[in-house]
Image 1 (cartoon, rainbow, N blue to C red):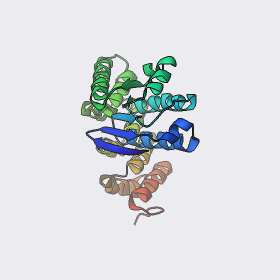
Image 2: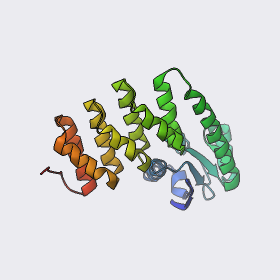
Image 3: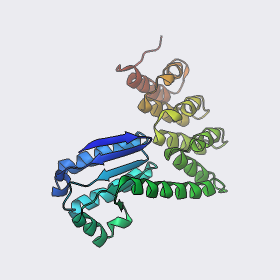
Image 4: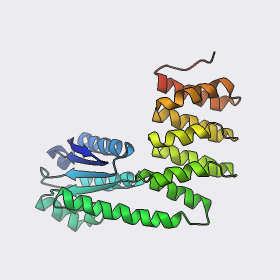
Length: 248
């Protein structure tokens, strides 16, 4: 299988016959490929099943699990060009209620767009919740589906008076795991709570954006908490391609 097309947060993945045989290695490769795309900010993953003639239970189970994972990252999985036997298998098992099956790319994109728009409307309502945690979770989900308002709201929430809420914000930013989260996470390196600083440093190492190098060096030099120093040092090792960073 391979990515046949990728543009504007949409990827088309062409599946080969190995996945329909239930081959574990092929299914693992499918999961790895799609998870990687979703983590990289792909909001719509279309699986082209034109060459698939059967849909065994192990393939359907894999797709159900994968849909849950992709949705958790703010994306959506859909099937295009399914053969009649595959359509029947999806219909009989009610899997078409979990992963949409469409005739072509255009109809799939429209359906996914409608789904994500509906999700945005629900999340916008959640932003008005009296519960701070609900607002933070809604902002994080908005950010994951490409809405920059979510990032702005998370950065604003880093000023919350409750350190537990600020920690949740940092964990949410870490889950977004792309360049938009870098500046808020750099800001969190100066938080009063060491746990917030520690997880911010860890997240910056995983995102691996060069803008974090100098702030992390400063954390290694001036931080007093050994756990934060360790995480900042580890993050710098990831960014600089070295085992660790030793302050001057």
